[in-house]
Length: 560
Image 1 (tube, rainbow, N blue to C red):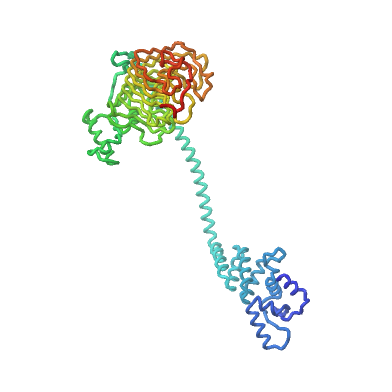
Image 2 (image 1 turned 45 degrees about the vertical axis):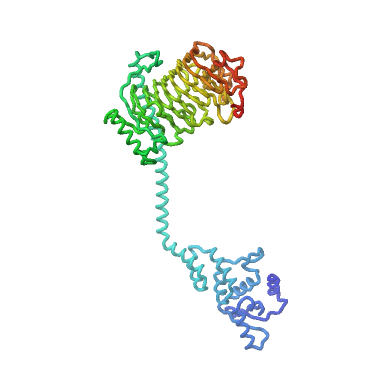
C-alpha cells in the first residue's frame, strides 16, 4: 500500500493539498493526510493552518530543512527510501546526519531509529566527532555514547599503541623462551637417559667384578637345603614395611594416617633394637634395592612392600647379586601394575629371595628371570589376587637363565606356576607344591590362556623369533614336588608351542638336543580338571608329561 501511495504522490494524478516550504522558499507539494500520519508536529501545524486560512491549499513552513531532505523524509514514510526492500534506495551516512535532526524536530521515531542505525554502522574514528555532535543535537544518547568511546580511544591511541607494541614484544619473547624451554627439556631428557645408562653400566661393571671375584663360589648342593646361594653376605639393609589391613586396627596402633605413622615408628624402633642404631633403614624396598651393593642382604619384617602408587608401571628391578630375606608367614612383596609388568624382574645377576609372599594383580609374571640371571627362591608363596583376569605365569625363566626353586607354593596361577624356555640353562624344583594351576583367563580361550591349556610346569617358548635350527638345552629336575588339582597337565614340554600370537610352524626347537627332564619322587594327584578326557592316550606316565599337544578342554562353566 505504501508503494502505491508513493507512486500516487509522485505521479501528480491526484492534486496535492499541502505545501511544505523548505529553505530558500522552495515548495515541496504533498498531501495533508500523509503529513498528519507521519508526524504529530506536522498534524498540529496543519490543524492551525486550516483554522486560520480559507484557502484549500495548506502551507507549513519548514525552512530549517532542504527540499531534498523533505523529499527523502516523505519517501521514507512511503517505504521507498531507507527500508529493507530490494528496490528501495538506501540511506547514506550523510543522509542520516541530515534526516536525524529533522526526525527529532518533527517527532518521527521510525525515521530517527533508522538514522541512528545507519550512523552506528558508519561510525569511525574519522567521523566520530561530527556524529557525536549530531547525536547530542538530535537526542540520540546511545549513538552519542558510542561516538564518545571512539573519541576517548582516539585521544589515548598513542598509549594503546604503545601497550600493544609492548604486548607483542612480550609475546615474541615468550615464544622464544618456550622454544628454548623445549630444547632444554629435550637436552635434560637426553642427559637423564645418559645418566641412567651410565648408572646401569656402573652397576653392570660392579656386578661383573663381583662375579669375577666370587668365581670360585660354585653352586653347592645340600641334601637338606637343595642348591645353596653361592655368595657370602656383607651388609644388612632394613626396610620399613606397610602394614597389613588388620594391623591398622590394632588397639595400640590406631587407624588411618596416624596409625600408619605409629606402625612405621614402632617397626623402626624394633629394627634399631635388633640391629643397632646405625643399621641402614630405607622407607621403601625399591630404595633399598637401589642402595644395595652386590653381596648385601635386604631383610624384610612382617608387612607389605609395594610401590606406593596404584597404577605404577614399575617392577622391582634387580641388577645386582643381593638377597631378599623376609619373616616367615607375613612378608609380602607386591605391585599394582596395570600394564602387565612383572612384580620382580631379575636381570644378569644372582638373586636369592626367601620367606616372601609374591603377590600380583594384573601382572604378566610374578617373577621374570632374564639375560643370563640366576634366582634362588626358597619358602616363597606365589599368589595372583586377580586370578581370572591375569595372563601371567608364576616364574618365567628365559633363555640362558637358571632357577633353583625350593619349598615354594603356588595356587590358582592363570597359566603355569613355572614357565621354562627350552634354551634355559638349569632349573631345579624341589619340595614344592603347585595346585589349581592352568586356571585360564576369564575371557578368551586361545592357548595358553584357556583352562587346562598350560601345564603346572611348562617348558615352552614365549619368544616370537625362533628358528628351526635352535636346539633345546634346558636341564630340568623336578623332585619331591606335589602337583595336584591342576586344570591341565602336571608337566608339559612343547618344542612347538601352541601360542595364539605366532605361527606355531615357525617356533620349533630341535629336541632333545642337549636338554633333559628328570622327574622323580613326586606326588601327582587329580590333574587335568579341564580336560574332556581325564587320562588321554597321549599322556606319558599317566598325567605327567605332554608333548606338543593342544588338548580338548571343557568350557569354564562346565568345570566343576
